[in-house]
Length: 165
Image (cartoon, rainbow, N blue to C red):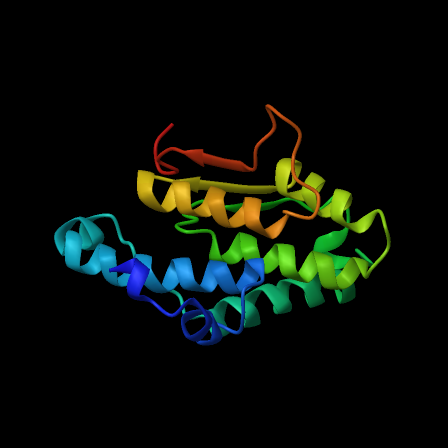
């Protein structure tokens, strides 16, 4: 079936073939899959889709408040700011944070390395389900493909239940 897909038309739906567009495509398929695969599990574990517009607004608001109210001039890009998403799902909030960090840091040669370092050390996610956990890792690796992590390093996303000790 996938061999019959016109890749150009498919990726045009998400804006192109950049890593952020691929992330949108991955999420586009995962959400309805989970609903069809096991709606009871989805309800029992509280798995709910957050629209991208809401994610963008909330992350932008936190970024702004870090700058204006808490004195972190670079907001989410400040090296002392740690982000924890206790139920990260496919990584929507972490990915938007990466996008904001990239935008805040600009285009210097050292930016990709700083973003990769943030993904490794300062953006932390917990997820209880294996499939979204894997998707979050995949999307974060795509987001930092211009400065991939070293062998043995990984994004700080963990397969765990955030509500247990």
